[in-house]
Amino acid sequence: MTINVKSAAQISLVLAATIAFVTAIAHLSCIWLGEACYSAQMAPEVIIESAQQGTWLAPIGTVLAASIFVIIGLYNLSAAQILRPLPLYIFANYFIAAMCIIRGILPLQLWLRKPERVSEEALIAGLMWLATGVLILSGHCEMRRQQRKAR
Image 1 (cartoon, one colour):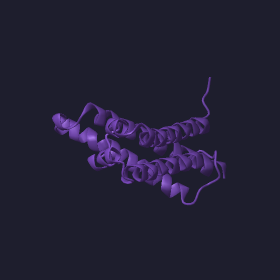
Image 2: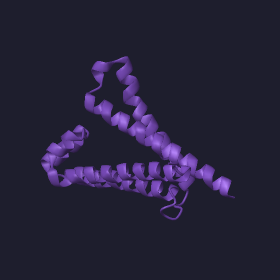
Image 3: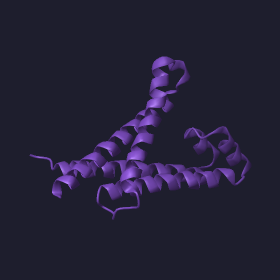
Image 4: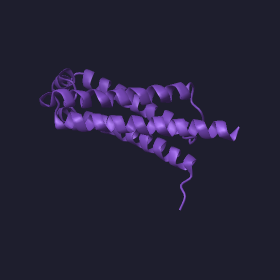
């Protein structure tokens, strides 16, 4: 059995898009599930307090954060050639991959230096960010290589 390299690249980008969409849904669930959900998802204290007090900061911030994840997912699907190319999709996917990798490395390097300062949840979240960034970068680079080769 052989694996089509283009298909493997598309799979990694679709997987990254799925992670982004699921993350958006998870964020939005906090609006309905309330303060406990914000706490479980390690939201900043100001957001948790907003949810407790019923102010608009928590839901508006949640919708904005979820929107960012939806946009990330759409850019990944664009790079996978499932959607038409979005504006600046090449730059955007490299940028998104870099941000995910940096976000993933930050808790990992802190855990290596001062493990008592990093919770298990933060470490797992960091590793997920790192894996997602690697999926995006590897999938996007392979899709670009395949496009150049096809020309």
